[in-house]
Length: 115
Image (cartoon, rainbow, N blue to C red; front, top):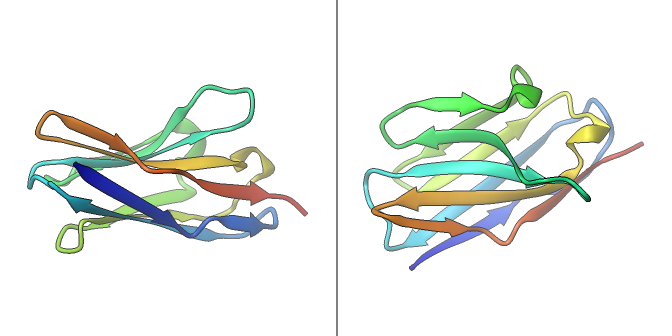
């Protein structure tokens, strides 16, 4: 099993910044992918950003240039730095791990962008 613990969500004004963290523990394999997804009310879950342990990174179109994903492989932790936040970024953000034929989701953390 793999456990994912997210932190860093909250309420922020438009134009502000937040940093999410997701710490993975348990049966982690060295070759893996850590990603962030989000789901807004009434919408499908969408990919925000993904980072592989071998260095590849990609972003969803709606966050390119504003969000940055990074990871600390020694700590099995992935981060999402979110800048220039917009009200449409409001969603529950989920951490996702895949590796060694296993896939796991975190419990989600709420991000609300509102004045």
